[in-house]
Image (cartoon, rainbow, N blue to C red; front, side, top):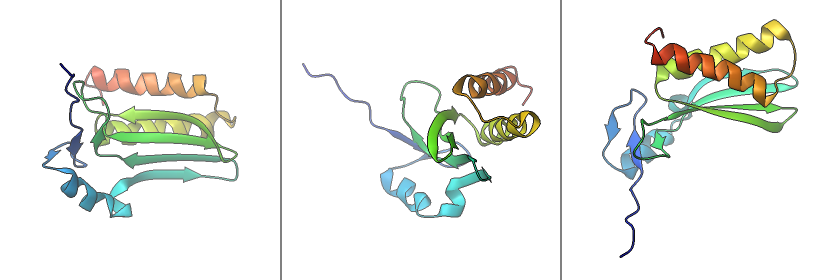
Length: 125
């Protein structure tokens, strides 16, 4: 017997389920809806977007994503559960860069993201 593949789940920016892929696609057509926050300078880009797609069904959905590019090369990706967590995560990563003025290592970004996850897990976000 073949294993059933779980269908992807779609969520709006507030975390409410979207009925089907067509509803999700309609929201994806709006770049202003997708882009949550963006920080750029001559070497670094930190971009946080709404994905609206649960890539790991069966777990708490992470429907937002922050990607870091250094010198136009991929550095790291972080996914967030809620809009608030995504905004806090983005701000923490930007602040870390601005305070240290060093280009991110994946380990540095991981420490910042872990602190944001923990803050929200404890309900302090």
